Image (cartoon, rainbow, N blue to C red):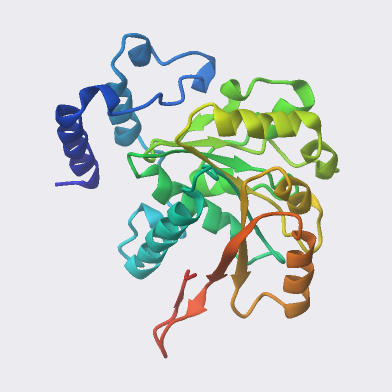
Length: 279
């Protein structure tokens, strides 16, 4: 039985046990209007559609999709998900999470992607993955999404978020792509419009995680600006790449944010057995 078939079978069992509470709203705003199936009251069929028509992703780095070539890495992301759930499911749900690193090439975007995927595969959560790296946006490339309108157009032209969200078909994961690079992203990211957008994504559905990818924290102020308006920050440190001074500088810039923890990435885990994403 395939993974999709197993998921649909599990969905059927859950509907039988509790049909009214099975699937909360599945991003009815995507595409600018409620989905046809949802308007007719058949939310379960929307869930099946999202599971059955995933994006044709070929990137070997998205190990959370169930990579047979690197099951150990996939398992580490599932462990990371469990830790994130424990850290965020408190009296007040800490559901807006920013992912950054000290410098470039440390795996912050891949950490954001894989964490978003494992969270979205859980029936209890929906996820919006937001590409706030307006200097070098990359999420669309890993997912095979054409770079069109996105966050930039929402902030500059007041395009409704509903029109630019992209359904991935990967569990309950929806992506808000960057929409392109800009010369001065800090001005956009520190705007009142950006703060309103984060608040809207946070509060629209009570079970929704909002995962935000940003540029590195040491050389740029983007993460520092957004870190003050999100619920928590995960800081990625890549073994053999991150420099101590950059780590200190990056963490210092986030002193006003709620640092949930450090993801130790690409760690050596045993002699001669290679490397994989590990926290």
